[in-house]
Length: 138
Picture 1 (tube, one colour):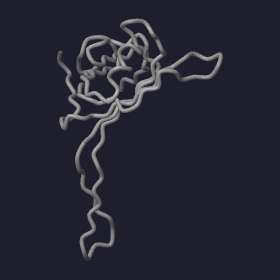
Picture 2 (cartoon, helix red, strand yellow):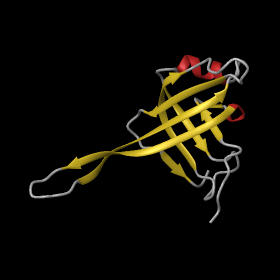
Picture 3 (cartoon, rainbow, N blue to C red):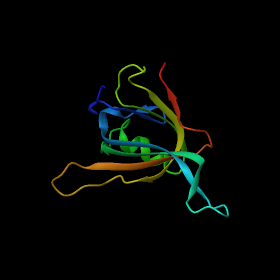
């Protein structure tokens, strides 16, 4: 079994590679839980409903022209293309690429305590009715 330490994640949002500013990445993929309670049953039955994805990212803030704030501020509330990989290396079986169209619902351009690094948290949720895609070939 090969375990992995996240050291070089790849994050592209709206065709802008922000990998060099990433502090944290949390990409989740889920199915809505649908409890079914038919008569005569004494325990819960559950079915999987609609699938969804969400990315919670924390960037080290950078106000340069092609970096974090310039990329994210103007697209809050907008659907954009997103690409995520655990490593910036080539897509493959040990480095799958996850792609989807998502909308940025929350972005904090200034976040942090005095004396600490300034960060920029952002939340992106799948928004086009299409599942998050997983590819192992480029």
